[in-house]
Length: 289
Image (cartoon, helix red, strand yellow):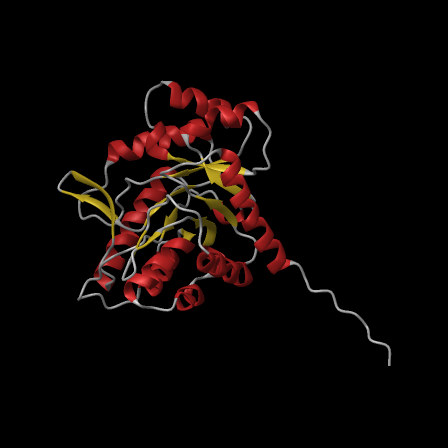
């Protein structure tokens, strides 16, 4: 068995953004208070073209991580070997700090639904996932990160809570966690659970990265849209995650209605300030008697 890169020993990267084509030029022409970037793997799993041209330039200036949306780790289809080969080829080019995808399934019988579908949380599904994650990590030669997805339905035959399931997957498969704070908030709203219960169940030594994003509140339910600013209750949940887990590499996702880079950097500054305020020890003063 190959020796895996000890991804969990990666240093704290700081505060980053998702790389989007709208910002290519700005990133290359100007200096920004930005520590790292996350790329959508599938956008660059091609033989050539402008996306790869810009990616090569940008990776000279910023550390990168790779984030996929098509691994479909939870599907009952065989693992897509061509996809894995292309993913590994991209990783060899990019030299990412780590590679992540989602704890979900995205298709069946060779059909890609282009959505992140939730899993039934059962012992059978857990065993299935652990085996497949092991195969992927063996192929890539490193641990991967898996992200909790937002969900809008549950399975009646689930026997384990989502947070217990994610914890067990990470421990039994020896993989890492990309903890999406916004997804916890959205799913908590949709299913009526306490988001703090989710945080309490997370193994701190498995969390490598945090996602923050905006969503759409429709009253009775919320939709994970990534096209709004981050709301106060998500910021509060992020602050609580920092209290519990300490320095975790944090980034903001924005996938629609994408504003100028400066706007996202201002929002990212809030994450910096929250993290600093939570982690800075409070000064104590001696009182004269």
